[in-house]
Structures are given as C-alpha cells and as structure tokens.
Image 1 (spheres, chains in turn green, cyan):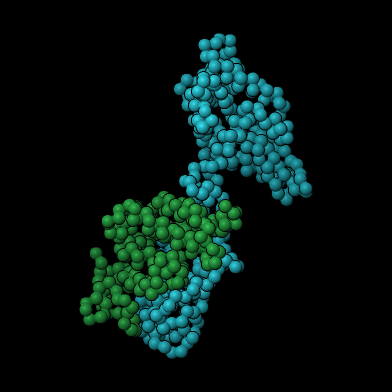
Image 2 (tube, chains in turn blue, orange):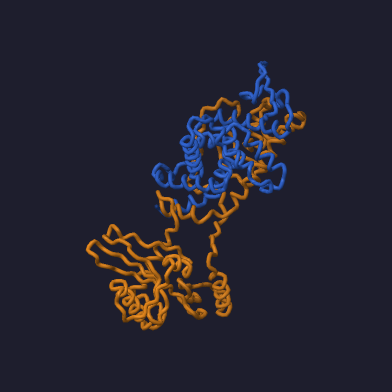
Length: 191
Length: 307
C-alpha cells in the first residue's frame, strides 16, 4: 500500500489504541481490536476518499469492528453485558492508585453501552458532535441526548446520592435515567 | 453570536465540550456565576472529562507495539514477524555458498572460511543420504531440537520452510558437526522419488569482539562492524573517536538476546494535514445554537476543528 497512507495511519495508532482500550479495557483485547480494525481498513482503503479526516474514518472502522465482534459473540445477549466491565473490575486495585480513577472507571462501566461509547468519543477523543455522529452512525441529536444523559448519570453515580430535578435552567433534553411522570427527571443511585 | 438567548441545556453541554465562541462562553459563565447547581453540574462534567482522559492516557502515550506496526505491512493477515522469513532465507543462501558476491563486497574475510563450510555441508549431506557410511566423523546432537538450537544461537525464531508445493517434504531435522567443525542445523527434504536435498545452517557468529571500522562516504563518517547475524553501520556527523565510542556502546547494549527494541513513535502532530480535512457537513440541526468555532481553552489534546 502507498507508504504515505501507511504513515498517516501509523500517526493515528495512539488514538485508536486509546479508544480501543476504553472500549475493551484489557490491553491485549484492545490491541486485538486495533489490529482487526487495521486489517479491515487496509482492505477497504479504497473507500477513503481523502475528503474528511482519516482519524475519524479509522475511528468509525474501529467502532464498527467492535460492534461486529460484540454481535458475533453472543447475538441474543444484551450488549451491556459485553462491555467487559467484569474483567476491568477484576484487575488489581493498584491499577489505578487514585480512588477517583477507580470510581470513574466503575461508573463508566455502569452506563448503558451506547451512552458510554458516545461519551468516550467526545470526552476522550475530543470529537465534535458531528464527527461523533458520523463515527457512531447516529443523528447528531442522538449524540447530544446520549451525552447529556451520560453526564448526568455520571454526576449521580459519583455523588452516590439521588438528585432531584434538573440542575439546569430549562427542561432537560431527552430526560435522564428515570422520569417520575411529571416531566422532570429524577436521577437515582444505580446499583 | 452573543445575543442574550437563554442559557439552556445545549449551551451547557456545548460549554463543557468546548464548542462555544468566546462571546457565548462569557454569557454562559455569567449564567453559571448566578446558578450554583448548573455550575456544579458543569464542574463535575469537566472533571469527568479530565478523569476519563487520565484513565486511558497510558494507552495513548505508549509506543504502539511492533505487532501493530507490522500489521500495516501485511494487509489481510495477522502478522507474526514478517522480517524473520527474510532472515531465514538469507541464512540459507549463505549456507549454500551461492552468494559469493556478498562475501566479496563486504570484505567479511577470506572465502576459504566459506569453502570449508561448504565442504562440511556436503559431508553432512552425504551422511544424510547414506547414514550407514562410515568414513567421516559425524557427531549428532541427539535430543537437541535443531530449530530451537538455531533460535537460541541467533535470537531468531526460525521455521523450516514449507516446500511441499515444490514437491519436497521435510523428513529430518538435526544438529550435526562434521569432524572438527562447528555444529550446524541440518534440514533434510525428500521428494516423491526419494531424492534428498539437505540444507545446512550454521550461525555466523564471530568468536572475537567485533572489529569496529571507520570509513567515510560522501563526507559522512560511518563506523561499521560485523557481529552475530548482522552487519552494522552507524553514521553521524561526529568526530571519529566519539563515533567509535558510540558504536561500541550501541553494540554492547544491542547484543543481548531477547532485548526488544521498539521505535519511538514521533510526536503526534495534532493539526490536520492540509487538503485532507474537510469540515463535516452539518446535519439538520434542531438546536437553537448555530454551529460555532473551534473549541477553546482547557483541552490541550484536541484538534482545532470546525464543526
């Protein structure tokens, strides 16, 4: 393959590894995902039109590869089960010295998969909402609502307490985790 | 544009993600100053961002493993070590003595050394054909696995090449030494009519400390030396004594079996390449906010990209 493209892809490896690590937790599984993604990207390199960012194209490839792997493993299970949260929590506690890091990881694992994947793209990889929408294959409004829910859920999880009402000025977008029927969200502690 | 619209959810979200222009940011910040709950939410979100990045920072900072870089070289197959096959092929070439040009050019030593090697290879070959023939002293190293022995000596993992599509079946692998010669690995292949081809492999290690030689090419000082399975050349615009000292230092650190060398990935240039970045087409947007300029401030890792 042309060396230039190979070099450009190599530049993106740290980002891909980071997102893969966030998706799969285990370093070996994460690198497996990146390798599968690279092989897929090389096979489909003719689809990259050089308009638009290679980084986002690769992230999209990575995410699709990840979803395919999830589907092929256990199609009938809830995808939430396959977030690999168990192995992550089974890692020695010394993995993250700081309590707040461990708590953040645990809280992230409790989010619904699509919220977590979206939040990671924006908060971790710094994608704009349009870019995240393109990588995930959803409308940009969906990105916003998932983000809002994910963030509010994380606030609640990290506080460990029920938060009543919306913390912000107007009616929240798309609600939070639970709705008591009066249109105002109630965030409860998630066990 | 700052036009005094009410600060809503979407503004706070955009503020957290750095999508607001300076004027709008100021408006949001003024709002936050008056609304502690909203400010707390924003603060928590910014903390979430920082923690998430810290959680996975080591995956980002670490140099990607060789296996991933190699995957770029071999599309479509999970790559082991593609370079190793090449090395094995070169070893084989050297053993059969075909590459006379190589000996001459690199000045590695008198060709007598290789003539005696070839003689030993032939003797070993004869013993594979006619094992019952006495007449040469042949020591076989009974239990020693020929290829692991080679791997240990050369620090390469080698596999006996599969020549079945050329009609040859691998029938024997052993380590032998002919008369007083040094031991080598011998692979024996056999074809359908019983003709045998043997390959004799011997690590090309040098027994002495390598001789470091200085030369110059087109003005570039270069130190070169032969050791183990490699020929080395170190080039740099340095005084001779320094270059030699550096070559020795490099060689000492290089020559440890099992040492992994991972090239350092250059610093990531965050800016998009000219001509390759096109702004994403904005999708139909139900938000009252118009797409705005690049993210601000507190996100050192992120590109300045327009929506």
